Length: 334
Ligand SMILES: NC(=O)c1ccc[n+]([C@@H]2O[C@H](COP(=O)([O-])OP(=O)(O)OC[C@H]3O[C@@H](n4cnc5c(N)ncnc54)[C@H](OP(=O)(O)O)[C@@H]3O)[C@@H](O)[C@H]2O)c1
Image (cartoon, rainbow, N blue to C red; front, side, top):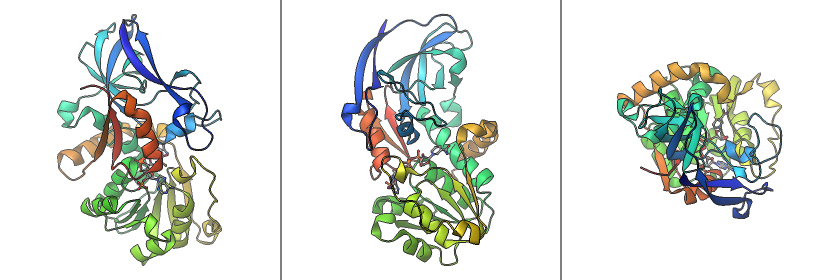
């Protein structure tokens, strides 16, 4: 038996989550039965979509159950194995995050190889994981970015946005990003964005129009609300919008854009997508992005918090913004 701590959802948040909606619970974890492995989790992901799982509502992601452990992407090391294909010491990615130890069906573990990819294990939760694939699919398959065009990316200094912007730039686009602090805006310029602005500095439409005086051809939307309104105002006829997320509306009701008629008048293509529908793109994404990293053409940033007790604050900071750059990761063990 191994002692582990795990986060439970004990009450469904109304609006912004508060600490009383959650409980850190200690429990004993059994040895793995046949076909299972015992994994000591190394690093876990906190992602905006987890907020949706706290609601008891039908969605693309099943709701978390009350008084049960939450879950999500995590990387860990096999410590005890009842599956010959996953010997002790194998580093795996699996879906039982929000806990220090997990007994996982071997078929739900994906071995990863940080040494050969030259990245830390946490990279499989970010640039080489779900957010990286989201950025890649959103830029190439959904927005159908083409060299010579201009793309606007919101939440551009985050896990998805920072990779989306760099991929678009490497594909020959002019890239404009928005973020919520001066430090993030500076960082965006440093990693190759052609223009960047702080959305707290003033009207988003005015700032976007100044950063893209000739308009934009495509918009990678992570925010919705005022950012979507700005993109609709500035986008050119026949522009494309990749609807990746609308984080400004995850915790509070906000007014929708009042200029949706531009979709008609400008003959726009607006396409939402969920990354889990695009797992067939994983091999080509993985090869492309790991090559770009190895060649020093694409950089990735991670913000690390330490210990399972910090995981809830880490998620709340992702939702509120301002505190992390790149991918937010919680280190659980080394
Ligand atoms: N469609 C899919 O399959 C898929 C998959 C993964 C993620 N997503 C979506 O992609 C988006 C980014 O996710 P991520 O994991 O990369 O998170 P992230 O960008 O690393 O973190 C979220 C960021 O959103 C920004 N933000 C929060 N509230 C905002 C507001 N009201 N206005 C403007 N910006 C705001 C904050 O950045 P600042 O500090 O700059 O304010 C915050 O840091 C989210 O909408 C998420 O739901 C979609």
